[in-house]
Image (cartoon, rainbow, N blue to C red; front, side, top):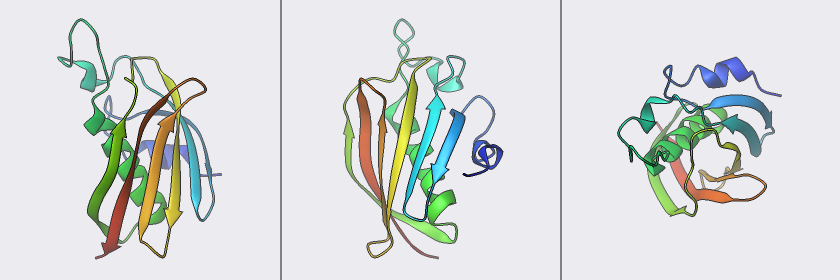
Length: 127
């Protein structure tokens, strides 16, 4: 189990997910989270139909991947990004991270029981 407060501290107030649980091993992480309807990202992003921007999903996954698997590394590349479903305010979902030490990469997927929201891969390098 990982310290939830340490993961939450990676984000500014009103910008990060509400992390409810995390199960982390040496090569995987499953982070359950809720998308708070009061996040600043919803301001002005489709005023009549609020949607969490894709770039925010990438930011969340990248910050968590770096903190859990690449503390002393720097970001190199983002690949295979796919946005499949819109993330609405109040959505509960799981971020799954899979670490590959040989490739220096982490794949991510945001999903829940009914939807796959986004997927992609980060590559990091030693600083």
